[in-house]
Length: 124
Image (cartoon, rainbow, N blue to C red; front, side):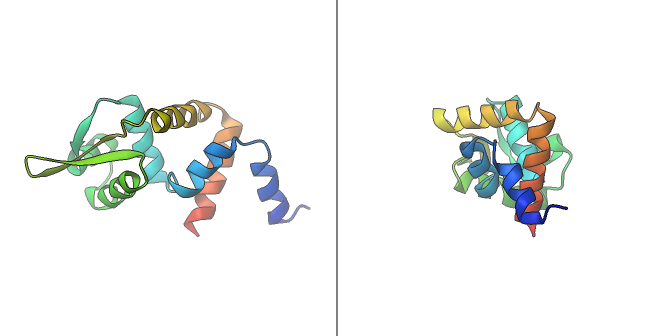
């Protein structure tokens, strides 16, 4: 029976290193994963944490800190619009492409299993 280090090595072996780094450092929670998917599907959205929470079916108290972290990490952009804090997908074409590659990779069950493993590992 393989130990957990062998499993971890196997789960990283054939993963694009850019995606692995993205999961380990930026999309390291399931809420962030949902938020990134939401912004990928709605790339022109600029909205408040409260509205984004409603669209994604989550509580604003859990969504807002994750939105702020994604903005801090360059995945999203945070702006002040008439006194309201709003979020939008980062305008950086490299980040947009990386998000696109990540979301497309999620169509593959094997990739999702590996990504889920890494997210759970980062939550410990």
